[in-house]
Each structure stands twice: as structure tokens, then as C-alpha cells.
Length: 231
Ligand SMILES: [Zn+2]
Image (cartoon, rainbow, N blue to C red; front, top):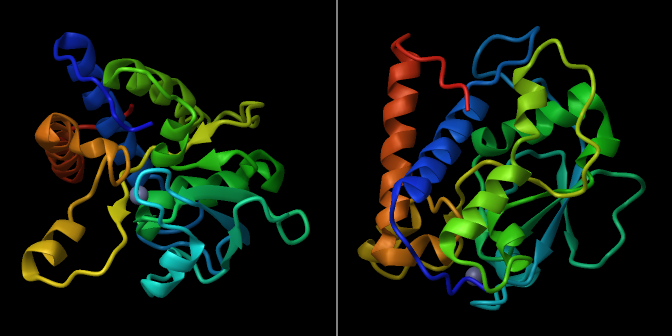
């Protein structure tokens, strides 16, 4: 599923740049009644479903054994296929990836602003790719780009409705989960992967490097007041 043929060209460049800028836009979301950097405690309760990774096999047990906490204390892990406790909204991730709280801020804010029902279809880019077998990297990114447009509802303060969809992919890079036996492996584990732990290696990481460069530059420009970083 993540063996993606790569092509270069303006279309792929544009897609990667837009997805990076969208993640930055999500990072800078601020709840209307809170100062920057503060998330209202507690975050909305949520179930995190761990999907066994079809590439490396990491599952919920592997995730738990890595000792990595979920982004918010109010979130709970559920097994893939296990019914969620009550009517909790859910976000699905691979067993080999984790997210920093800032990366999933738009999920928490969407639940808070639009209610838990809208959150049932949240999933990581890595999970979304498992549903797109056989596509080239460009075609897969184009589909992820479409699935991430729900962020517009959060960016538009005048909108009071959320897209009625079940495939809301979270516009965020993740980091790989796994034991780091060497310094090199540990350093590698800190590098964000823009489409999950495996597909991001396409083209020797060329597009991942490009994504992270755009994300870094856009964030710096936004902090400096030179850009609004709208996706
Ligand atoms: Zn994996």
C-alpha cells in the first residue's frame, strides 16, 4: 500500500507545499477564548483506534510497549474494530506512528466547536493511505489533499457547520514509534514524516524533506508576522 511510484513536476510540488502550509495553519489555530499555546483542559474525550500497520505490523500492543503517551490525557486507546466506549469520537492511527499535541489540535478544536459526531472519521495520513492502494504518490497526495479540506471549516470563524464526511484526514505529519537502540535511530525517530512512517521515504525522502522545509519556513514567517499561512 505504501509502495508509491513517484513522479516529479509542478503538480507534486504544489501538493506537498499546500499540505505543509495546511499543517502550519492548523498549528496556529487558537480557540477564541484562550491565549496562544493553551488548550482548554480537559481536551474533549476521544477514542484513539490503533490500526495494525500493513507494512511493519506494529499494532496497539507495539504502540503501548513503546511507552509513548497519547497527545491528551483524556484520550483512550481502543483496538481496531473494537467498539468505542459510549459515543466517543474516534481518530484512527497506525501502530507505528505518534502525534504531538500540536499536530492534533485541529481535531480537539473540531470536536469542541462542532460536537463529537463530526469526529467519527478522523484518521492519520498513514491510515488514509492504506485505503488508496496502487496509486502514485501524486495521485495519493491529491486524494489526501481533498480529505483534509475539512480544516477550512475551522479556519473560517464564520462557519457553524462541519463537512458531512467520514474520511476526515488529519493534516499533520507523524513521528515513528519504535525502539531506538542507537543514536542514529533515535535521531531518525525525531524526524517528522509527512505521510506516515513508511510512504514518507519515497524518493529517498525527497518529498518529506521538501514538506518539512516548507513547514519550517511557513511557521517562521507566520511567527514573524509575514504570512497568514492559510492553506
Ligand atoms: Zn508501520
